[in-house]
Length: 143
Image (cartoon, rainbow, N blue to C red; front, side, top):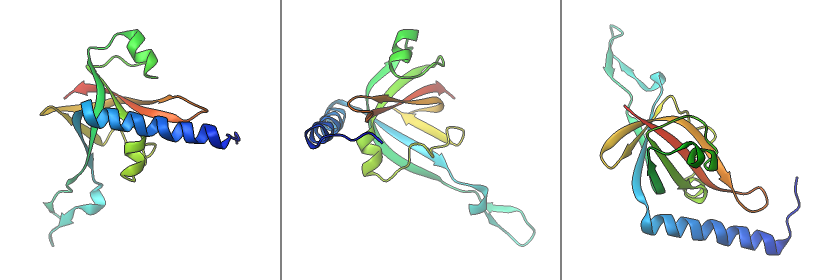
């Protein structure tokens, strides 16, 4: 593990806080909808699905949001797949909401951006100081 001096730790914390404030001020609202598992379905006595599992929403903001990103923009975001929209979210937002970004299943997650539904094609992370992740990025495709 990398030992980071206290002054650098303070700098990292301040950078993450600044990014979160900037995204909160200028960002576009996003809603991540994670489809719950089949185990949460309600069945009647005949085994027919009575109630399907709901989506668990997670509200965040994204900035910048880039429509039709080029290969260079995707590369800077740590992504490779072509997509319709590229979004950056604050890593600190994910920590504050107690959502494990690594456990986020892209197959079961949809994103509502400006009233339009997208699926996540790929997710990535962008670092900054001393191996600290500052942004989590998502490549979105239209449904």
